[in-house]
Picture 1: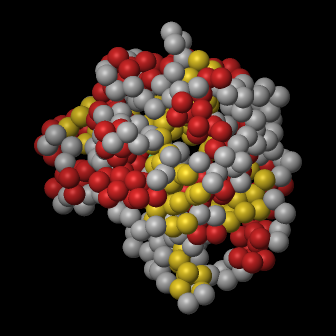
Picture 2: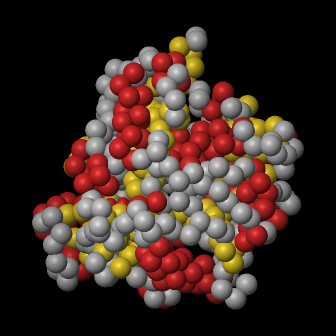
Length: 445
Ligand code: AMP
Ligand code: GLY
């Protein structure tokens, strides 16, 4: 099989790494890729918002299947374009990608289908937004409607901060059109879990659960980022919680999309808050999470090529998937200035030493090779991902890898996975209760 991966982050490096070892793979391409991906696949230049350009590339490469990593090409309608041309691609249609492309669409969809989520109001003008604010208690959450690369959500602890967020988004237009309309919503508390599935529209395959660390600094302080680290461990969800998520959130989402004429296919990410009242939806992403993909794919034992083939043929429900019981942890190294304007072109040293450590893998994100030197080229530079028999050992391994790496201005969190270690062992998130791991048929299919 000839496969094309779209994207250039740690998620795409992890996909390319798993696909590179697939028995089914004859040729593997990635566009645009990065210096790490170039070790596993042949990289080609592409503009990820140019859907016609992506189709041309897939045709030229004679790719049997394309897999879209990030949201931009999906929201721009790359899947519809591929389907018009009869080309194979994994991902949702443009209509289905609105689950991520518009927070207003997503929240109203959740309301239409009784999917548990925070109470909210939509505002289309600054004046109405200010009025709506008065109907919420503090802290309050302000969300820009459109895509904003992790910068479109503000949690305001007082009225001044909330008004500032509205001013930035709606009057100063700091996010361009994305902030023209906003969602104002109640602030939920609990632990966050990233629950990601793969679906072909008939069967669903829940991936192992993960927890992201969105804030820049230790202790969840500082601005939100795309994700500074993630871990995957079965203890994140009990079997009961897993089943409740499927019943109250996943199944009504897929049934709702189908009912509205936009059957969902591809990876679907449910960003959840595990509240005392049960799991509640924060947001959908129409793709694998990044950095969540790195620990998830490190735990996948099955051949990813097989899974994607089954997905393409609509046989996902029949697939037997194997996961390592061992947890995995990913620590992201970011450039100085991230999540604002990152300082780039800094030489990276120490990566050869990491490759010699057992159970550790560097997934590259913003890296490039120039005159045989590995340089930084973006905000998130790489994710050091490790697996071991238990979570403390996996964390220790990941940080042993981190300690060998260096570039000017390197920043990272020191507490990835720490919340899990602090959690009392006899809470609902018990390690004894493992989530069922197989693929399953959707009700009524
Ligand atoms: P989103 O892009 O909607 O996932 O929001 C980004 C992050 O903001 C989430 O991962 C949460 O940490 C936080 N967040 C979003 N909505 C809420 C909410 N209603 N209550 C508390 N935190 C939230
Ligand atoms: N790590 C969260 C995301 O991929 O959006």
